[in-house]
Image 1: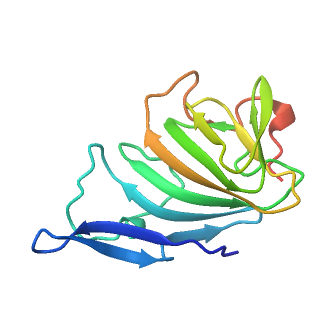
Image 2 (image 1 turned 180 degrees about the vertical axis):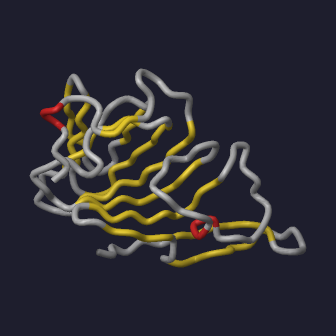
Length: 167
């Protein structure tokens, strides 16, 4: 599933002049049954080295979170009865999530809340899961920043058995 997006990346040319390096819809894309992900950019460390001309979206993408660095991704979520994979999980990241289109339900151990276009979620490494109850595809922009673990640290399917369905 490919939903359109445009990625505009700036940088410096050989003369030190600011330029547009990339104006495309390329990023690294992967899809599963319920979600598709487009990696738009990533850094391997903070502070970030902003020199160079390489397309950092092509630099070794994995679903491992941003250890020592950052990731900027678009996530499209199909309507489903179950939780978005990987289900209930925690990460060793600080995540900024902005719902762009559709509606998503955020589940944590003690509550759930629905988020819609323009809503911003700041997830601070705790157990959580997402569900798109439908009827339309939901899209969110996600920025992952490496962080020290909290609670039990990064874990998958670690919290509430009632929420562990990953449909």
